[in-house]
Length: 146
Image (cartoon, rainbow, N blue to C red; front, side):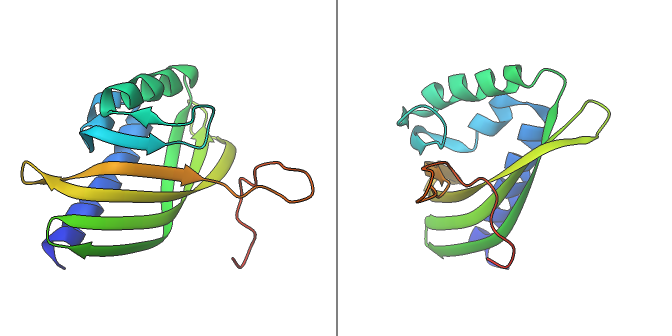
């Protein structure tokens, strides 16, 4: 496995574990300070990791005792020296404090990563969900077989 592929795998695992632990600091370390984030919810864009950290902290606080287990499916990568693009279908599954499943949603995720200080970091994140033609509502679960 190439070094870039190993770095991407570490970023994915850190992302998953930081969200589950509600550790905003660990999550934000994955992002370049000048990162731009196009999130699915409510705000057009977050400019810089400090802005994104405030949104992440608010999300984690809103969870109360719940945790979010994340899974990445259909991960595709393309990389060159010091640069990578990752796309995936990401499931965000809320769990009660006792570990019981509560709800789940999926997003399409794209990361653009570049080397910064010898570490691959997210410089752009884009999450999205398709919108239904008939009702203009976000489709938060991928249809089976897609």
